[in-house]
Amino acid sequence: MSLQLHDIHVRYDRHTVLDGISAEFRDGAVTAVIGRNGAGKSTLLRAAAGLLACDGTIALDGTPATPPRCRGAIAYMPQDTSANSSLSLVEVVLLGRLNALGLRVEPALVRVAEALV
Image 1 (spheres, one colour):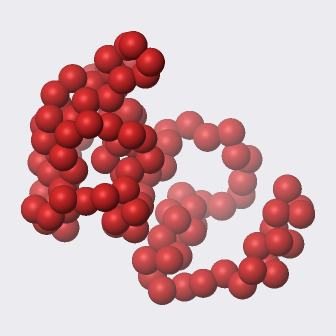
Image 2 (cartoon, one colour):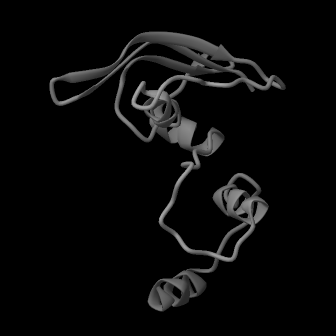
Protein backbone atom coordinates (compact mmCIF):
# COMPACT_ATOMS: atom_id res chain seq x y z
CA MET A 1 0.00 0.00 0.00
CA SER A 2 1.39 3.40 -0.94
CA LEU A 3 0.78 6.62 0.96
CA GLN A 4 0.55 9.96 -0.81
CA LEU A 5 0.58 13.31 0.94
CA HIS A 6 -0.23 16.43 -1.06
CA ASP A 7 -0.01 20.03 0.12
CA ILE A 8 -0.19 19.15 3.84
CA HIS A 9 -0.57 22.10 6.23
CA VAL A 10 -0.58 21.85 10.03
CA ARG A 11 -0.88 24.75 12.42
CA TYR A 12 -0.77 24.90 16.20
CA ASP A 13 -2.80 28.01 17.01
CA ARG A 14 -1.13 30.68 14.86
CA HIS A 15 2.16 28.82 14.46
CA THR A 16 2.55 27.02 11.10
CA VAL A 17 4.39 23.73 11.59
CA LEU A 18 3.96 22.19 8.13
CA ASP A 19 3.41 24.40 5.10
CA GLY A 20 2.57 22.65 1.84
CA ILE A 21 4.41 19.35 2.34
CA SER A 22 3.98 16.73 -0.40
CA ALA A 23 5.51 13.25 -0.39
CA GLU A 24 4.92 9.70 -1.53
CA PHE A 25 5.78 6.61 0.48
CA ARG A 26 5.79 3.62 -1.87
CA ASP A 27 4.82 0.08 -1.01
CA GLY A 28 7.86 -2.03 -0.16
CA ALA A 29 10.24 0.94 0.00
CA VAL A 30 12.16 2.06 3.05
CA THR A 31 11.82 5.82 3.46
CA ALA A 32 13.41 8.12 6.02
CA VAL A 33 11.93 11.41 7.17
CA ILE A 34 14.86 13.48 8.38
CA GLY A 35 15.27 16.97 9.75
CA ARG A 36 16.39 18.95 12.73
CA ASN A 37 14.58 18.88 16.07
CA GLY A 38 11.27 20.71 15.82
CA ALA A 39 11.17 20.57 12.02
CA GLY A 40 7.81 18.75 11.98
CA LYS A 41 8.79 15.12 11.31
CA SER A 42 6.55 13.67 14.02
CA THR A 43 3.79 16.12 13.16
CA LEU A 44 3.89 14.92 9.55
CA LEU A 45 3.67 11.26 10.58
CA ARG A 46 0.86 11.93 13.07
CA ALA A 47 -1.11 13.85 10.42
CA ALA A 48 -0.58 11.03 7.90
CA ALA A 49 -1.86 8.50 10.43
CA GLY A 50 -5.03 10.55 10.98
CA LEU A 51 -4.07 11.39 14.56
CA LEU A 52 -3.74 15.12 13.93
CA ALA A 53 -5.98 17.48 11.96
CA CYS A 54 -4.42 18.87 8.81
CA ASP A 55 -5.29 20.60 5.56
CA GLY A 56 -4.30 18.93 2.31
CA THR A 57 -4.85 15.50 0.82
CA ILE A 58 -3.86 12.14 2.27
CA ALA A 59 -4.35 9.15 -0.03
CA LEU A 60 -3.78 5.43 0.28
CA ASP A 61 -3.09 3.76 -3.08
CA GLY A 62 -4.38 6.91 -4.77
CA THR A 63 -7.74 6.94 -2.95
CA PRO A 64 -8.38 9.87 -0.60
CA ALA A 65 -8.16 8.61 2.97
CA THR A 66 -10.32 9.79 5.83
CA PRO A 67 -8.90 9.58 9.37
CA PRO A 68 -10.77 6.33 10.22
CA ARG A 69 -9.31 4.65 7.13
CA CYS A 70 -5.84 5.95 8.00
CA ARG A 71 -6.15 4.62 11.54
CA GLY A 72 -6.90 1.17 10.19
CA ALA A 73 -4.01 1.17 7.73
CA ILE A 74 -1.27 3.24 9.36
CA ALA A 75 0.30 2.64 12.74
CA TYR A 76 2.18 5.39 14.55
CA MET A 77 4.59 4.66 17.36
CA PRO A 78 6.35 7.60 18.97
CA GLN A 79 10.07 7.35 19.56
CA ASP A 80 9.80 8.11 23.24
CA THR A 81 6.96 6.93 25.44
CA SER A 82 6.45 7.18 29.15
CA ALA A 83 5.08 3.64 29.31
CA ASN A 84 7.26 1.34 31.34
CA SER A 85 6.70 -2.13 29.93
CA SER A 86 8.47 -5.44 29.60
CA LEU A 87 6.98 -5.94 26.12
CA SER A 88 9.36 -6.22 23.20
CA LEU A 89 9.08 -3.86 20.23
CA VAL A 90 7.50 -6.64 18.14
CA GLU A 91 4.89 -7.28 20.86
CA VAL A 92 4.01 -3.58 21.07
CA VAL A 93 3.65 -3.32 17.29
CA LEU A 94 1.48 -6.46 17.20
CA LEU A 95 -0.76 -4.99 19.92
CA GLY A 96 -1.32 -1.99 17.70
CA ARG A 97 -2.29 -4.26 14.81
CA LEU A 98 -4.74 -6.56 16.63
CA ASN A 99 -7.76 -5.23 14.78
CA ALA A 100 -6.07 -5.39 11.37
CA LEU A 101 -5.06 -8.98 12.10
CA GLY A 102 -8.68 -9.86 12.90
CA LEU A 103 -7.98 -10.47 16.58
CA ARG A 104 -10.23 -9.20 19.34
CA VAL A 105 -9.62 -8.64 23.03
CA GLU A 106 -12.54 -9.62 25.23
CA PRO A 107 -14.11 -6.57 26.97
CA ALA A 108 -13.69 -8.21 30.39
CA LEU A 109 -9.97 -8.58 29.75
CA VAL A 110 -9.74 -4.91 28.82
CA ARG A 111 -11.45 -3.93 32.09
CA VAL A 112 -9.01 -6.09 34.06
CA ALA A 113 -6.02 -4.51 32.29
CA GLU A 114 -7.38 -1.00 32.93
CA ALA A 115 -7.92 -1.80 36.61
CA LEU A 116 -4.30 -2.90 36.96
CA VAL A 117 -2.92 0.38 35.67
